[in-house]
Image 1 (tube, rainbow, N blue to C red):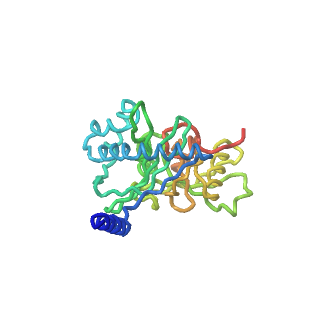
Image 2 (cartoon, rainbow, N blue to C red):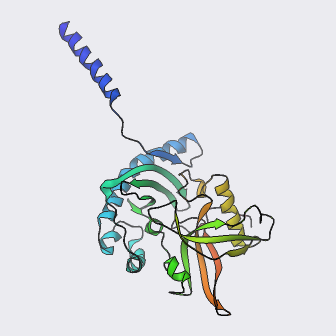
Image 3 (tube, rainbow, N blue to C red):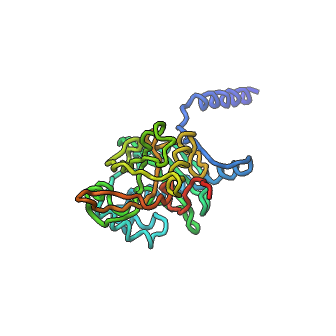
Length: 286
């Protein structure tokens, strides 16, 4: 009886101490699943994929050459040339994986399958999001999304350097939205994102006027409507990591000279997101 009482006291005391210990912060988990079965499946996928994707990101950040980084990214053979070009034109941001804290993990259902989207903060002051997709049996980093890849650095393109046309991953802001809501054209400006500082923007373009009756105009209207309703492309549930009122775009822009002045034309809104998928991410009518 004495032993029984002694063991019982140990169990009760240990449970009390366990409850008193501070718990490690758990990242929020979001999903765009529509029913309980899909929700359970998405949560299981988050639990399975998150540690694997964490290892992939840590390996990528620890690598010091494009050849080493290439093994951690989607479509490595296709990506290799873009990666080499990118690091020849842009400085690499050194982030210590040990300083990173995962703040959000969620599944977003893209047209080519589920992807894991994660958000990170760093003790160095950086904040950024990453996307991982499954290729074969491996989860790999969507590198183009991660570095916000553009054919030419946006500031250089605006200044007249590089090819006269290219595709860019940019942030877009609607100008005078209330004043122009009945106008035939939507007015936007395009800004370069700042890696690691998601709530800040870089160089801003001149104004673009896009007819609302065109495909480009309808896509822009739909994307800005989504953000006003606090919704995300593809029905995703991740937090909004953009500056207030801004949307993410992949766009094709042409630069030309007219009357001795440098001008720019928006050729195509490729997508209303930065993922490496071709679907626009928003629904528009034919």
